Length: 126
Image (cartoon, rainbow, N blue to C red; front, side):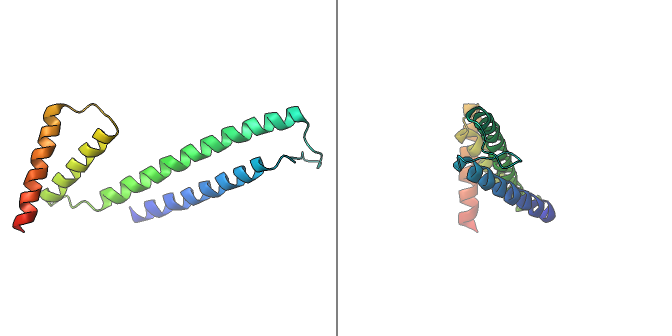
């Protein structure tokens, strides 16, 4: 899993450099064609539209990869042989779902609260 995270981090860095490159190109009005001639207003407008679309797509990919990296790091630290660790992770998932406004049944919220109380008791006893 560490190799996978490292590869994803490398890809995220590549995307970040692409984002900076596109933003730099967009900041200059003096865009030229292959022959070095300045683009006409229509050509520039068409190029700018494509560049903005490319920027948005690259940012979307970057965000997805960063989210995947966070998820992999969080899951890497789970001890599947430790029921307390698993219960803590389940509670974290439910809280995350609640923050993102997924439909969570009130009884499921109550279950998470009960598990939290149990975990507090277990940590206090330790």
